Length: 51
Image (tube, rainbow, N blue to C red; front, side):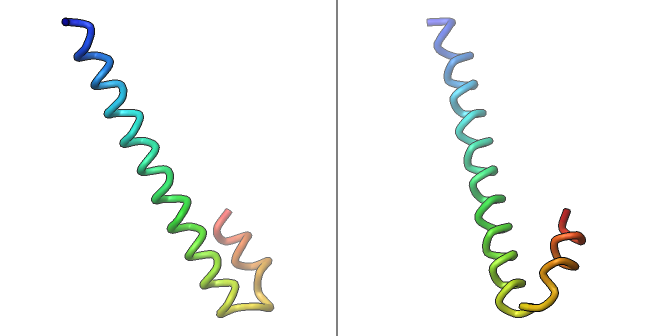
């Protein structure tokens, strides 16, 4: 029984981290897509500013 609590905490931490990473990837993808659709000729400037 005592070993179930650390494993559950590890699973909660991993699932929270995975969810945050997926949300960040989705937000960055939508942001880059909207920037590309609005500014077609200035991709290099946007990429250099983001990275």
